[in-house]
Amino acid sequence: MADPVALPAVPAAAARTRTRLAAVAGFAAIWGFLLLTLFYPLLRLFYDAFSNDAGALTLENFREFFTDAFYLRSLVNSLLLGFGTVLTTSVVGIAVAVLLVRYEFAGRGLFSYLTLLPIISPPLVGVLGFVFILGRAGTVNVLLMDYLGLRQPINFMYGVHGVLLVETLHLFPMITLNVLDALAKIDPSLEEAAESVGSRGWRKFWTITLPLTTPGYVAGALLVFIWTFADFATPLVVGVHELLASQAYLNIVQFVDRRLFRMGIVISVLMVALAVVFLVAAKQYVAIKDYSSLAYSRVQRRRLSPGKQALAVTFLSLLLFLAFLPFLGVTLAAFGRAWSLTPFPLQYTFAYFARVTAETPKYILNSFLYSGLAVAICIGVGVPIAWILARTKAPGRGLLDALNTLILAIPGTAIGIAYIRAFHAPLPGLQVGLTSLWIVMPLVLAVRRLPYTVRGSFASLLLVHRSLEEAAGSVGASKVRTFKDITLPMIWRGILVGSLFSFMTSLQEASATIFLNLGGWETIPVGIFTFYIAGSANEAAALSFILIIVAALSLALVNRVAGARLGGVFG
Image 1: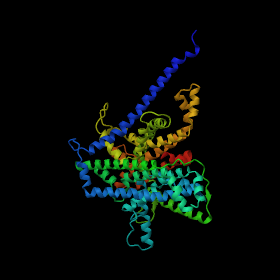
Image 2 (image 1 turned 120 degrees about the horizontal axis):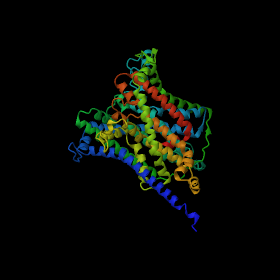
Image 3 (image 1 turned 90 degrees about the horizontal axis):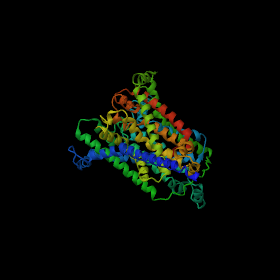
Image 4 (image 1 turned 180 degrees about the vertical axis):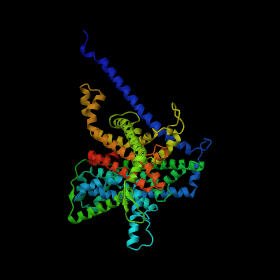
């Protein structure tokens, strides 16, 4: 008589085999995606930089770069601007994070939300808004000349100091988010122990608190440096050309002089190489120290005295006033008419919105289409990557994690130029190059924003105990059903947070897409840049206003879903 218990063994074994095959196929598909969209373009970019017109390998291109005083000056200026922005954002961002995490004062909840808002608009929008308010014919200079008798306008914006101002007020939330997340995880007993031996105030902060935020701070500082390093639009608006990103853009878009085009590629490779060097150095610096003392104990906020409350509120209010000045400038320019040598517009109109929504709706429609498709790709690729990192010991798992971090470090300018070089010629199975197909736009956005979806999903997976999934498996549930019924309901918030942040930042992307867009493919940031360069500042402001509103709504939803966990998206 046959053993009845042994009968289901064959179908169960077949099911396990199918599951393994599906897992292997999915793993291979993920690597195939990364090889095609990341490895191959960067490899082509490096090959072009190290070869001549005949295709022979050479170092001549780099010799030419490092013997050109103008390019060397651009390199030094870019490094100084990057480090300067890290310094200024660190001072502001850490101060804001400490106030929000450690102290209780009037309006703290409101400030904790408002301090995130500057990040919702790209630096391009910020610099336009500042030009409207602080430019030579802006509101502030007009008021100073009309009411204080100033004969010459003050140069608030045009120069490296203007770029530093814009980048600082746009990017300090990057530091705040990462430091805030790290501060919230410090075991209070460590600081209590320091106080018990007489270490208080600034000494305790410098020797105990700040060092324990190093992993979060370094992540935020690296992002700030890379974003500043790769931004070409902000410097060009305020007349700063001697920066690597600006030169890469100008040399590539001219498409006439082959030498300049080649130097644009060389500059892009140097930007990638420097970003990788700083990423590796940052990871090594964090790795040589032990942060196992971090805990998830809730930190008790201390109530500030009335005098200190006034100082905290004044500091945050002044900071937000400066950070929101671009929003005011953009709003006035978007709705204002007859605004010339007057502090404010003399008339208001919706005509500029009519033009950008009715006459040229492609900017808005394209942005939503490309960003939506990019998010779909991010979810389809990012959630499986997060699962591999959190739940498996698959071969190449460490490299996959490193690549996900590397994507954040690669400047968008370099990615855009790499795509031009890699996908201009037809791929196998295609009659035309990928750069001739509009799908390249959501594809490059997906690659640029993939880490946010991965990090959001990964952080949530770490909070789901494996025993819950094992219990489902013990009663016969397949891995797919276990994920659908057990895991997904517990991690959907993390996926949503990462996806929304990917969507919001995809809407803002200009550094990569501006090289790839053809007629009819333009997005909102490209439209803003195009309108402004063409002298249609009001239309540029109208598009900027739309971008700010959409991004603000996205951030409000992210904040509602994620709360203080938003920092995990950048970790």
